[in-house]
Length: 435
Image (cartoon, rainbow, N blue to C red; front, side, top):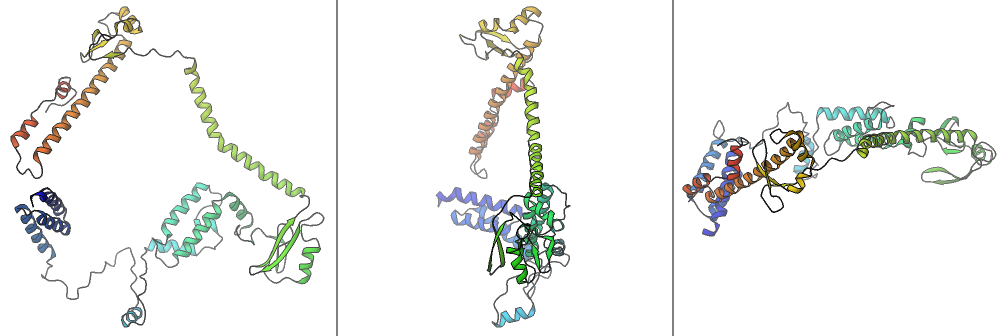
């Protein structure tokens, strides 16, 4: 139908672009679409060319495809390992005795090496897992975590043990990125989130790990009735008078103790709390120091402006004469005519400068003012010239249409030869290259 002609030409243009880029499948599809919408000789010729190109590319050296019809296997030098299902699994699936097994994921030798390095570390050796030093900054920890997370993410790494290695890296980052957890880990070397963490081994008896209060925090083995009695009634709950009171409960998680109250705080514990408070205060001051320095620098930089006399603004001007802007002047550079308000201009320091040095001598104030006038004038010319060129281009494209079918080329040449006054003015001023 004639109404589908434009859409058919558009599909034909898309088919031509796909053919030029070597995408024969898409080129054939759009060419056939063009023919179905509106059959044209150009579309038939293009479809024939696509078929010839396809026949030439599909023929092998022997003129036929492989008898087995199997795809070519990737080269052995590929960096990716592809794991094919075992023969027993394949035969079992073929006989219906076993369902299809999920295909194993790919991985590179570098990814496998990262997995082996992380898995070789202890689960609580967090610095070794992230491969950072113990005194490193938080930025280095985040950088190391991002690098390892990208290398070990289950969606990207299919090496054996990658999931476990990713969990170890995530756990290490979770501990070391938290200041309190990192400090607890550095002090006792165990998982700070575990209920057995922070236990002191200095006063631990065989089979019993003591808590920081002197009472039971967890057990490595069995506990005797004597130890249990002494823990609750024999001063094991805080080291004597005023110590904390504990309650005990048994459950699926083992033996648990809960601190219910306490007496006075030991002097050594108070000192330890005060010492911990001092680094936090100094750390906050160090973090605020750059902001304080920046504020002081900005304040000192603004002092001269506060006491300086503000500059007098330039006189107002116009490129067209009006009742208000009636005094004509001409710039010394590009000889551009402009108009100023005579009353305002006569009271401006530039008028005093002209009176002092003369009209023929260009003073610094007048030079700066006229440079601004010329800048505004040239910028306006550039904008109008560009809009004129854009309008010409749009008219030409509308006249040519698709593939130039039925185009009046004399009219197109006439559009090309049309003059744009603003562009010609810029060429006269030497600011635009002549065609």
